[in-house]
Length: 446
Ligand code: NDP
Ligand code: 2IT
Image 1 (cartoon, rainbow, N blue to C red):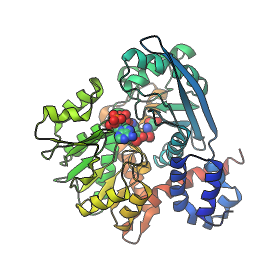
Image 2 (cartoon, protein in one colour):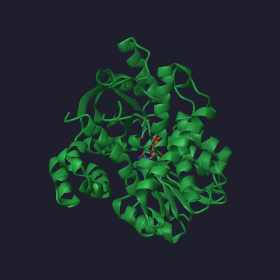
Image 3 (spheres, protein in one colour):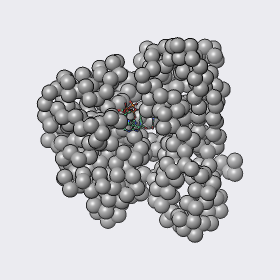
Image 4 (tube, protein in one colour):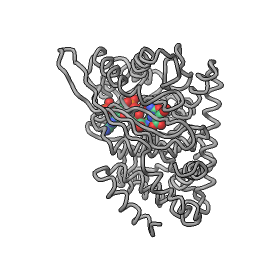
């Protein structure tokens, strides 16, 4: 048994050198669950800690593809199958130049606990490539997706591992990957989630992460007898998660004033209403433009080049772009501007210093693995519909999603209560951990 979390982290760092995001994700979980380990000798004797940080399988492969000029390109593909104690591996695929082994291990590790929190039987995985979809033609995207799946197809299956989207992978890419998988296997199965509605996709899956992160914030606000009505909300990102968060917050009476991408932030003090959101969806999903163009259409809005949204006054902040996009300083600025509720659509968007600032100031702080679990939960619902060969209505899926988000909130309260304050970080980590660790013990040393 390691004597302290610090001891254990030394082991993790030595064993996984050069993977700072993975160290960060492990450190946070280990700090939360340490008292549980200390009080339960069964976890110590089964060496659960060392076992839970080691991926069951890490697959790294070459992806070659030709661009429109006929030039041959090489990228690296990955699938990290982290833990299958409570169900088949499940988690998204990310296509972004920043993808590397450490980033995907952090995401796969988070996914294990997130999936456990959903109440559904889902193990944890993550994959992707350092391929950059920006500026690529339709043909190039399709050829890359096909070549990526040519290898990945050997390692996945509807009862083995079910990938989905993440940054840079949406309905279009899932379509291309599904098409080639079906051709290779000669089987029409639910091997990916986030599929098109006419060929096995679930209603509400596109909306699910953004809606879920908003439902989670709504549950947190309820504990202080508050709701979204009249609140000013800042959101980062402008992709899938951010767009549907705007939609749900607006429907619930909040006013969203920012969106961003890796180049900068737009600030619209009048609020991004439904008509403006339709413009954003067309800009980002069809024309694949930059968020800056919003200010050409809506002249009242400002563009803050190279800035993130955290300097703008708000009561609620929803980080929905990427990891480590909110620093300790940003957290202080948000609080001093009146923000008291943060719900994370992105995975690990807040740096460790920022997390400490939120906790110290008793902010309603819904950490990613709880707050953004609505996406993978609805993927789980897509898998259920696929195996039953039927489709639930929009209402039915949304009701289930809402119930799951309420249940995750309750789990966080149950494990995270510290006097009057709920430490959702502790709640999510312990709530997610216990179920997986117990399943591992019951299945023996495998
Ligand atoms: P999209 O690809 O649809 O959108 C990503 C958005 O984040 C874009 O606006 C992008 O801007 C921005 N972004 C990406 N990388 C960076 C960066 N390094 N710095 C600043 N901005 C960046 O992805 P999603 O909306 O699906 O994912 C957003 C976040 O939500 C991710 O953290 C993902 O892991 C998480 N998530 C997604 C789920 C899903 O179901 N899709 C489920 C749960 C979590 P740009 O165009 O400039 O790159
Ligand atoms: O981070 C995530 O939870 C996702 N990208 C969604 C994963 C999924 O399998 O739907």
